[in-house]
Length: 244
Image 1 (cartoon, rainbow, N blue to C red):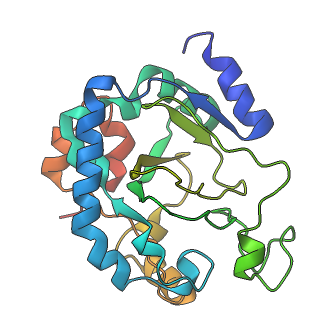
Image 2: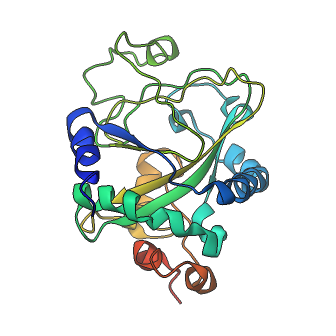
Image 3: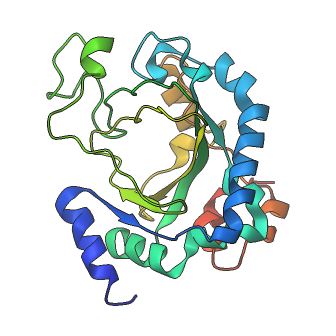
């Protein structure tokens, strides 16, 4: 880890996020964006079919007309996925999560033109029933209300935003004339239980029951996909290869 990584890790400690530029190489950007668009198109019907009111904390059934997610992008990038374990990025990740950090899931995000501001949420451990900062009932108007001290994070194409998903965050509106494409990669410490995300596992089925059908699983890699990943990326996904 180089010396200039320490301030970035410290920034995450102090404010919860930082921006790391030039993570995805310029030469790889078109391929990554094209793959996310293609997977978004292919997976959209299934995503819409599994929509529930808890999927985004609102009763807005048109969500997938404006913003959608496509799971398992890195596995399909193959040899082009080296940036997921790039020296600068993984240095910050390991300084925050330890030397054996791994990926819990990844997905592409497509935010279409005209997409409205998303809803305040934090991924863990608080939810609408346990969080104290947002008054009940957790209505759409309250959940989407801007905060006086909020900041919209921006950066050049290919940059990475590293942030603690336990922070309150929301999807920014897309006022541009074209879709906004992003790749989300969730890094986790080695000790975090990820079985709740393994399709068909006892814990995943329990979560599915408790969350009224909200999909929370992440597709495992098949052996051929894992073997096609760069050597430096494989340790991040070794735990998520489909079992025989």
